[in-house]
Amino acid sequence: MSTDSPADRAPRHGGLPEQLDAWRMVAARRSFEGALPLSTMPRLRDSLVDTEGEARVEVDFDTDALRVPYIELRITAKLPLECQRSLQRFVYPVRIVQRLGLIRDEADEEALPEGYEALLVGEHGLLHPAELVEDELILAVPVVPVAPGTDVVEQDWTAPEEETQRASPFAVLGQLKDKQK
Image 1 (cartoon, rainbow, N blue to C red):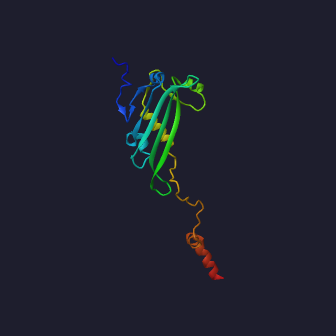
Image 2 (cartoon, rainbow, N blue to C red):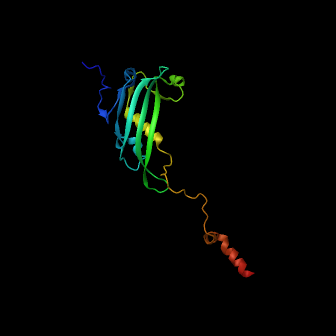
Image 3 (cartoon, rainbow, N blue to C red):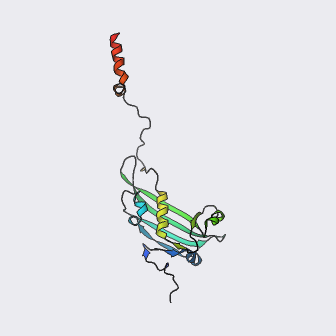
């Protein structure tokens, strides 16, 4: 007879369970690894040029020396983004290591050691690892993606003198005044 709960027997998504009981995984010091296609991340897709590729993921559940339960995520991905200078597709490499301290309610957040991000799990303990991975990748996307090696656009652009004179409505009056002298 199996002792797995339905949450721990959920179909695996790229080697990761679709959902699991975080508290049981911490107690068992479980680890998972797998790959998640970028196409399966609906919230991340809006930031990408296309959904080619995948995220390689390792998830470890454990407690630290202070007995703080945590999840450690290690994510490696190559995100296809659009350079805002050249408007060309480029691949943005992402390497994330994030330690999430598990808390049962918001009041526990202050007790987390430095270097931990709080993850509110509650008593039920149900987690969706793919959603955690997607959250971290969304945070990793730069606000203004720029491909390495693209030329910087000049900030101070000056128009040629003849364009400046043509654009000025008073330039014609100045020319008329000069002719009258």
